[in-house]
Image (cartoon, rainbow, N blue to C red; front, side, top):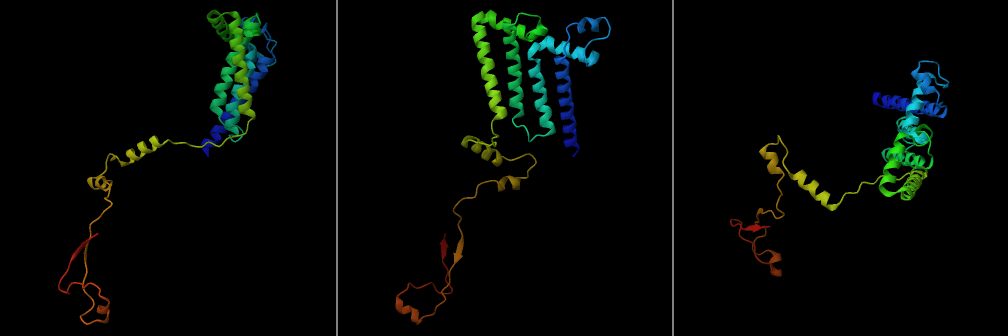
Length: 237
């Protein structure tokens, strides 16, 4: 019960941080940075904390910082209501890749300050791809990457939920069978010997006695005679 409430509290914290970050970057005022350095009142609606948050996020990711807010919302909603979202890890990784790709693409198209384009991360990604492949190829590669990532993200978020089916190969089953046969630490010798395979043929000694006397009516059918009562034979099965 405590773990459940702890997860819900953590989810509420993540959702609150995401909403506050959304408000901060939406009401970003470029002049607030100088006001923060000079310790004078800022114009941001969320105060100095909102001004610092907006400046840091817009400096790092630029306009793609809105996607970073969505990335924070996904684990927060999952911790609050885990039945609403599945495959959370895959979606978080996909959103982070989409955020970085969009940041680099915006930096190639908009030649403005990092806070008004793709941020420092976008300038680094766009500059690296452009220097490696050239300007035109960088546009094509990053545009294709962002498009494919966005389509996959839409399919994962809007597609139906799939039941996870565990698939185990025959080789893994053999390894598990061998591991179960191996003796574990602390087992006695008797327990180890009990793991040994029992042969499929077991010899058993059976004694058969004659139950019908001489002159019995059944003798007329010519059945083979059984040994005398004092005799016994061993039959192996």
